[in-house]
Length: 253
Image (cartoon, rainbow, N blue to C red):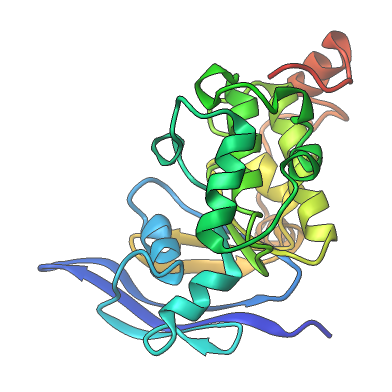
């Protein structure tokens, strides 16, 4: 049985009189892909930032790998990886130089080319970050979150704005990261993405968790209420058609 690696109990975050997170509780198991889903403003990003030690909480308890968030924030930072946004990279440095820079900050020794191999970017080693395509930037962003060999990585909407090829390539990358034993916490607005990737999901709305289970069980629960789609579910969708017609190989994305 997998052990619990993150525990959140009655977590609350207020901004003045506004309650952004309203006493949510959940556990994340070691080695799983756990999804936080919800509409914009639901509180999922705030929740992630608190666990990542990037934002203070109003009340509640958070434990990461047995470490209390209030007592050991610096120790927690050493064992997690956080997907950086575009503003986190120096645009004039190439990918090798960026990896060396972040490795130095973590006091880690790492071979940049080996890391770039994990995200299929070895051929871009001497390219500047600003020269990469959208999909390549996202893959490099995830690579940067692995520099400190984290036990847990946090991915905040990693495939937003990517074309179908790039999305599916990134899905495979995320699965491979989990296969190496790393726990993955992900937010996404794409429900098909959550259904494919996540072992369990928590659905958050207005600062509260309104459902928490595996995607399959949540779907079964909905069907059990008598819910039916208005039209027959086909064996494929338009995205499958697009992928099939435009090729299966890894493309420059």
